[in-house]
Length: 119
Length: 112
Image (cartoon, rainbow over all chains, first blue to last red; front, side, top):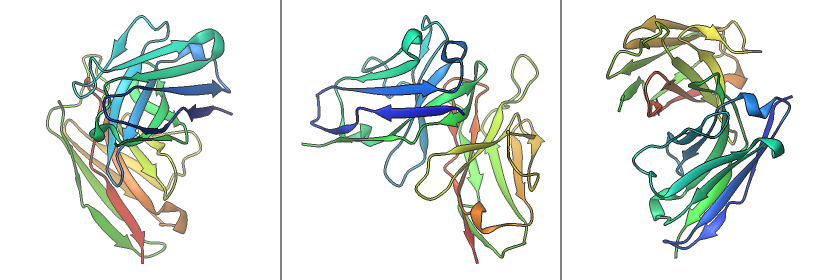
């Protein structure tokens, strides 16, 4: 059974940093592109980052480019999101998601982790 | 960026009934490889999204045949037949043809 379990969320002040983790199991992690997708309270879904199987390629929307860094450790079947210079508009539930092949279709999602950016 | 527009915003249906949700993209979703990467997701109350349909009309593993997707180019539809109580939630369309991947704003399905 595919499982994605996020951790590392919490309350953080504007301008500070936070690192999210996602532990994957039930599939060969190194064979899949992975992503982070977020959802602000009572809002829709917003893609945040994608990483290739080896980690050599990463993709971001303009809203987080230069502030967020996605990475992975295939030996540990783990995905990470380093978030710097956090803003109030980054407040959201962050989901770890698996790509279906290399395409941005997300076939499995974690339960999500809440990040609140507030002073 | 590709803008995904979903209609209606919400709808109410009786158990056993049928509903359709529309999704339109601001650009064609036909990829260079000929595939169309339009997906449908359901987010049940208090849960994370789950994939229902991928590449317009392909049901994901374990998804009931009561769910069907259709469309091409920029116009797509999700149909749910014989609606059951477990179908309630917010339905999102999403495109993976172009980066950045984008989603519609969602359609909330309520059971009468």
